[in-house]
Image 1 (cartoon, one colour):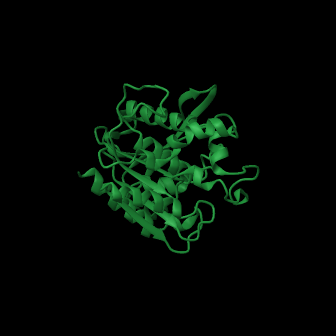
Image 2: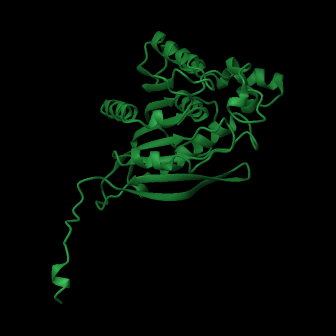
Image 3: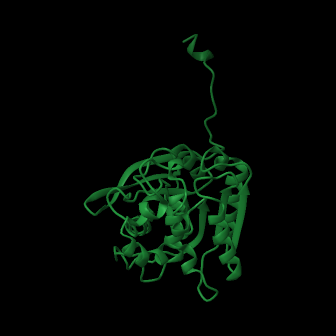
Amino acid sequence: MEHIDKLPVIDAELDYMTVEYYPNILYGVRGGVNRYIQLMKPFENEPGKKYPLIIYYQGSAFAEQEMYRWLPFLAGIAKMGYVVASVQGRGFEVARFPAMVEDAKAGLRYMIRHAEEYQADPEQLIIWGDSSGGHTALMVGLSNGLPVLDDGTDSEVEAHIKGIIDFYGVTDPMTMLTLDRSTVIEGIDDIASALMGDDMEKMAGLMKYAKATEYISSERDIPPILIFHGDADVTVPISQSELLYDALKKAGKDAEFYIVKGAPHAGPAFHAPSVTEKMDTFIKRVLSR
């Protein structure tokens, strides 16, 4: 035992938060397609402890989402003390608007119903999305409680949304008809067509429901909204976020808007501590109300 006695001993008491990952949680069959949640939560041995719940909608130019792409980033957010559930929706390849919003609401309600299983507090609820997922988050949050963009799945489940975080999201798809779509995904002529299809008559009937500012008025209760957008974004121009922020301020609503200097569409600039710290501050502020 001469060598054994000389082995170093490490103190394994944790002074930081670690995260566990629950992959591919089936929340429903949507239009014949299985849809899943990727969930990350703080590792916690206290069974009764709960953490605020963040529902995240991954951007994808409204196409099938790459659900595993940003999991390391989402794990970093979970390490800040949040349960983060990334909800998959149907892309335009299989269903058009408002299917992705209906899916987003179904996934949100699933997490509310199953919150206790993952130590999540459904009364401390934030929704978040980037790009097309930012549009989805806005649609879910701004239409919450209204009889629109909802197929009735688990409609008895109430979502008490405390805040919305929008990363360079689409605000009004119809104003993006003339953009060069080669910067997004090959084969898409424009955001509006990807979202709603090529039937212009049908598109005209739907377009107001896909416009975030349609749901903003001084009379309506709207959760506080935090916006980030890069000033070098040529995919979703910063004017989309300016439209949203202007409408919120004119209606007297709680809104914060940060311009990320030199940032293009998506990418590591939005994973910087200067961004995530402002996210954390915003979340803590709105949850304390």
